[in-house]
Image (cartoon, rainbow, N blue to C red; front, side, top):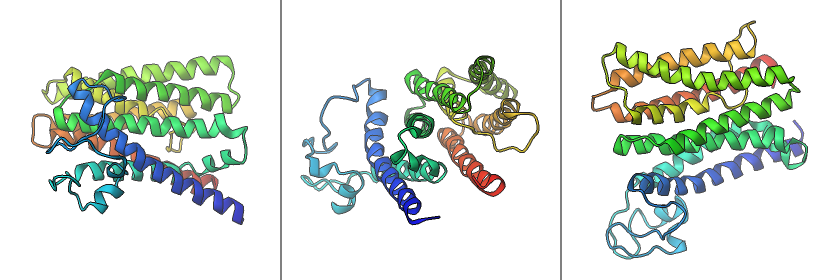
Length: 288
């Protein structure tokens, strides 16, 4: 690895992580306001205790909370560490995404790589952001939202289209692949319902929306990590079904228990682990 490549990798990883922390601050707003029916694009942030409007210096993601020692600058009331944790977690997800998509760094010096590499990375972290928002809203309120599910699913469809474009797929393969994505989402939800019925648990609309958001992550990029001779589409379908069964059993078994609200979080963590495994597999087997 030459010095230029190493610099690009380090620059990309650091920038992605810092940007993830910033995005995490925005996700805090999404998680808090969407259940209240408030807009996420307008309005000022304020202290939840004294109501004082927060200045820009109070809103530097993660660092403001650390510098102020977890307290409001104006009234001294404790600021929940949850906000810093979500910002840190989002930064960690972006870090992991960057490490598992290192080739994205080359878009900085290769404009032709923008669509095929950088756009795919952006779509993946966009779906991750939707999933983080969905899982925390479900954790807090037990609710699920269609708009978050659509962001995740549409990003998966676009990522699949970009992958097909990059590999010069023919029209028939395009249609088949996109059909598999759409059918896969439907099958995933049906599988969830069947598992919930088997466990004699109720599968609500909120459960459906939360699970659809997680499902969208499965269709981002060349996700398959299994070693088979069945081809990419068939192998991906097998992985989706396997993940669906594991995820469904976790969700259904925790339903109506004290740990129910963390079930979607566990599903997201499994996705992150699979991303790491896929990258490690590609590096070891194909020297990717």
